[in-house]
Length: 307
Ligand code: F6P
Image (cartoon, rainbow, N blue to C red; front, top):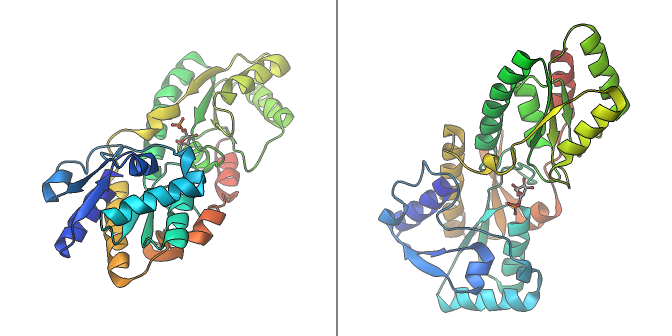
């Protein structure tokens, strides 16, 4: 997200605006944790993971009285436009600030889950899947040396975008996603067949779904049903850091700059999305109500290629 912050600050200043950075997301807005940002404030951050503005979830923002307090703070600072970088939760807050208090708001999709409606890509997704595939390649080295079955769990909350991309790119034999549940009996049968053919090494990717750590449940099921002693590796929060890829830096720079252009042109209450590499504007209300649906294409391809 740092590349997006840098692009917002430098584009806004290039157009003669002043920029106020809010630290800690909506909680920081409520606590009035803010300071003016200058060209030099965002020097040397494009290559850094995470966000220099800090972030966090804010349960209070579910309640109108807190949103009123936040809007009052923004108005007290003469804020004439708000750029909100985050996922669908952040956009629900941004939509409310726009509709309830008339704060001109533009959203920039930043989450590793890639599950935001209205955009092919979210900032952080490309870096997360590259980080995951690097880890899976390392796991494959030890799995093939020891002829073992590994279950690798990736983040994504209720979406399987990370799982299917890293499963396909990592050559996984099986990929479990929340969107397309698989019958465990079929997976067990396939693993048994592989082992009977002398293919003792398998990499199974599972999205965390609602329950981080579900990979252990899966391993237990394989042990009980087939006597397979699978090893488990949970990538977890390692997917949330690291040096951003070129793809993410370019995407974030384009989206951050476009967000300022939108505010300048009076296009409020929208998110900057990308479709077929073209930037588009998507009404925030549609974004908050939707989700980037996972297609089965990658799963079917991975299943063919992993035999
Ligand atoms: O939404 C991004 C995400 O990384 C999810 O993939 C994950 O389930 C969740 O955040 C973890 O949240 P936290 O860091 O608050 O535990």
